Length: 366
Image (cartoon, helix red, strand yellow):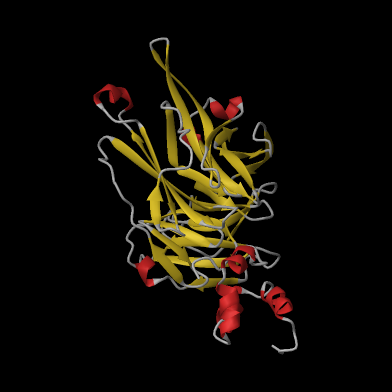
């Protein structure tokens, strides 16, 4: 690049380059490397493209593999297989805790940026006795500092025998990548003792972590319960309760799942209408006080089992399907809600071994 171009203009040009180009030009000169590696540049850089990241376990070699799709008009033709970091390959039967700002948080326990091929290991302290305690993890990036954080929640799972446990029922710890250390959250407003988290049902949106949960209370000599959302602000580190509509609050939590659709939280409800499996989709409004039903996902008759894995930015759901016919294998597919048609993405992993996340490339971990 010409020396006649002011450095400030060069910096603006760099912000519009793809990640792979930035990695290459870092080695051109010290000034460019210093700029690209700076916290301000990494914080303000955002890839222009929206992607879908899919993970699956191969049917042949049983290895976990990753594919990145362009989430645009070319979908699903433009795709690339990602090379996994050697630290990630060391994991056995890992699962994805969450994805945010181009990072994947993998149990047990790595932060991985597949686009710059860098991973960081994280030590998890104070693993509690699993006979008494349950531990859940959440991952996100603070929108103010751009600092990746992992939230570790430990609570008593012997709800009927609390009197036999002498310690407090909740313990929350927060790991920040910038310090490389675990600590207590900034505030002490922990969830109520009657809350039970569904740790497998979590999503991060705009610096807020959400879990699906149940409030289980004693009433009239028995138990009453209702479903709700628990949020955790990655900046203030405060917990908050979010009520669900009555139709979602007072049903089995096993029939509910939460996802990210564009930049909004949606709740999927598993239901049966006229012997057909359907998934009504509810979206949370900005004020956190109301939910609106967006549409219903209708499942074709030739599919016996299905799990919704995520959404394209257009709103089309990505499903993990197991067809009725034995000669077919389970696969990832995109569903068109109105026509009830599905189109295979050409990813045929082991049954229900898939994860799907919306994804934007970033320079975090550089």
